[in-house]
Image (cartoon, rainbow, N blue to C red; front, side, top):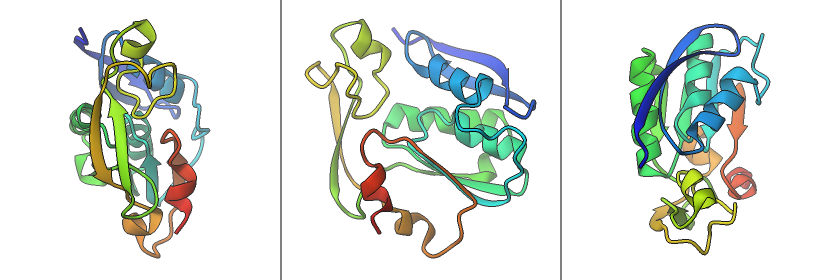
Length: 180
């Protein structure tokens, strides 16, 4: 159902990138909003040091940040296993594997038990948003997979290190992630 696709894009700052994604899912929408439409406002910015991509999905934000900012290290947090696989593929395809650390976990209050729902089925909306963990887009009552994780908070990831830039979009875990 979700045929693998590969396409070339440009980052908001005009650098070429290659993105692996899944047909018939929200992947294209996510990539396009970040790369084509600069949803998070990174065009023209120079960011050095450490950045966080919380709710990394398939890594479009992490890739754009790393490609556009050679002195930046990105920590990408993502709980959905197939998304983590795509982040790894996309980092390798764009030569930034050494500058993106992938944390396969859910964002939330440090150590809190989190149930992540994903791989939704049952209708067009559910299958389109199958890889958005804990989606509330009409999917919670649809058949899905679950995964139990211990959440990571911001201190777990960075201690007291300074963070230069953060994108956080993790379907309800934002405040708990920032709590500590």
